[in-house]
Image 1 (cartoon, rainbow, N blue to C red):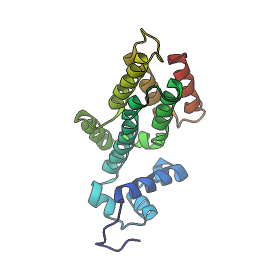
Image 2 (spheres, helix red, strand yellow):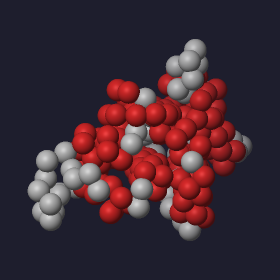
Image 3 (tube, rainbow, N blue to C red):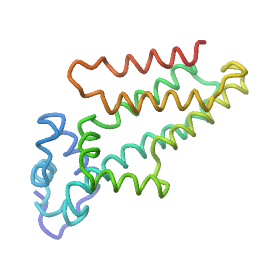
Image 4 (cartoon, helix red, strand yellow):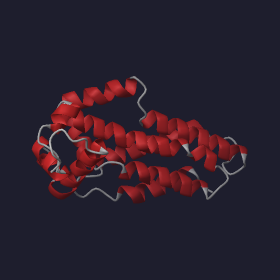
Length: 195
């Protein structure tokens, strides 16, 4: 346990990691302020001090993970001509699916405060699905100029189809009996980019 008044390096990531471990191990219902701070080895009130409560914390976790995936997607246009188009698109799709446990997303959706905070942040320009879609469109445009994506391919609609489907898979991936979302994403990429 960190002593009171002592700065904790990488506090946000430490708390985010603790929350992800709790959800993976015990489910979303176990995600309480006390559970998170205990798992992270922090003082009990630190989550409220830094985030204002569990709802705001969950919103920040979701926004952080989407921002990471968007940053990765922004690097994709520079990869044009390297590896295969399918491999590059599949990597982004799987990265987005792996960015968050669907149960964390479910928490964010069922909390009015968390979902409102996420909506506001996205409206103010926080990177999310639209940023990922834009990066994928730019990447597909670059590949099209290199002749690795067929002329006439609607790259914007292809990016929208991929991001929209992955968004759906992320939101429903934790349901009992749901197919493996990674396999579904791979099949979609193969359909969207036939060569």
